[in-house]
Length: 468
Image 1 (cartoon, rainbow, N blue to C red):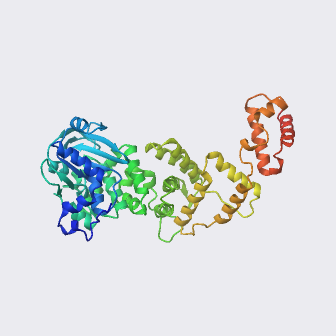
Image 2: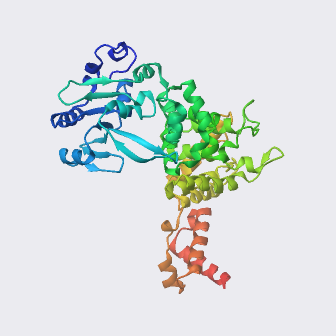
Image 3: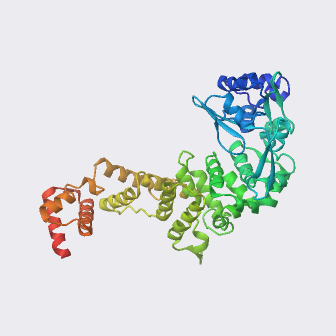
């Protein structure tokens, strides 16, 4: 399927708009629209789906709007599920996800997050009037018995062509209705490569404090998408410059103005956003860790130093991620990455020291060591250094050599286990048993040749005698 980008297409020229979009609509989407049209229902493609079509992007899912009430859509479409009280019906066909929402007009936004109630309507024009940005306020579809038409009351097509993000109507009003729209503006500008129109940007700056009313989950969803952009620094700087960051994370906002003595003319916040950009977008956990890896620095800054910022930062990062309601596994991994990111490798490390380093990271979780090295590479670039500074290539090579030798790094690969110690040495189950197994593991990490059953039993017997 070929999508038609705005520049140079019929859409930009304003000629044959409906035909050009029609050619870009997948068969499954067109089939669903025709089911609704044939039932006497008005139905349109709207929102980000249509925006992506005119930009030449492939929509991740498809947003449709209809004049049919949710109950009627459920009756008409097999497998449709009424998802919420805001008029959205969900449909999944093969690998395509559809959301069909009844035309609506929102009322009584009193908490800057969501309408207190929704009034359904029968007009696509009124439905588009309640949307956030002009590029999301276009529609393509038809009223019953009419040919498909392109509906663009706010010149969203022109803004898409000019790569401009502009609020529908008065920006402050839009953002007071739902404060998340300000964070979404920054995210869309970052992921789409758009500029935020001046009045819209001013509206964000004027109402940025309203973001404190948003749930952590909603902020996290936008932040994850922003961090997935090719250059998340664009959005992170926008969050800071507009004042949104102060509401999302006062701890990160406090990095502005803190000297770093790394890249001339740049402060701690510059270092952070450089570090985030330097981590691959394919590593979302490490990118999020890069965002918070120095979150403890402002609070530990004294005499040009940041003593203990890694330990303090780990606790602060955990609290921030808790506010975002990040999954426990993600939260805990990032906390450990922050806690250990100041490791310092030296060429005089013994092989045993390398094995202990590997075992320590492996005990935290699979993949921890590689993620820690990737975070250090991002930190290096953020400091104006080559990514592999600090002899990281040498460390990686030594780690690879130890792993290739299949060295013992955990209890599971010891030549004895707890059952052996209980049966051969009469050890009872309990803390002492675990302590001796840990001591045996440490001995084998130091000297892999010790990993033989008779040797370990002899060592354990000596440890037992010393313990008593």
